[in-house]
Image: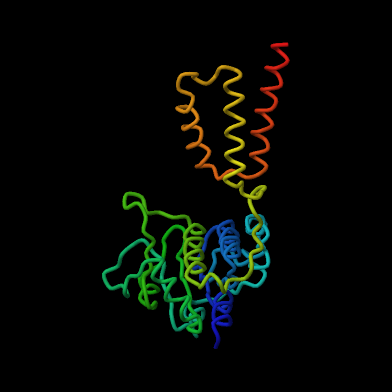
Length: 258
């Protein structure tokens, strides 16, 4: 299997299994958390509400991830849900006396990303009781999410979001589907050194005209302004704006003197 096929298959092979989930809103938010990271396979084991996938609250909180709900599967037991999985990780904040090996979310993601053919699964417990010991012991690893030890409680959807994010980031970034991310805001051509020098000379002339500069030590202020502008990575349009301001100042001062 080539790299591209392997990377893309993780998005459909990785299972997010929710055990005995109580609130339909959490199921909807989990679907949304999964879809934002590109994952599609949601499995429920004995949900409290049999019609949870079509529940109004679940659909509302899934937002535009209703397709994840529509394609979700429901099983009567964890054994059915994990039947052909070769790697299952139990996500829990409670350490157990006889738990499988403990892995962090990031370590788990690295393992899963490198071997999606294992049909991996991430298992999450109910909102009230978490995962029972018998389910944790069926898994190959117990997954911990590093958090504030004084308050390590995560909402179900938050835990899913963290694991989904880590799994996505563990994949080679150049193999991910094109996100078509546009630049956040207008981006112009960077200004040249000559353009910046011309603007600074023009600005110095304008500041001198309104007596803002200390005539005895004009370069002290200009050095500070030069350092300020050097941190901003000025663009051509910004240079034009600053020169326009300087031009208007000089024009006003000339008119006032006349």
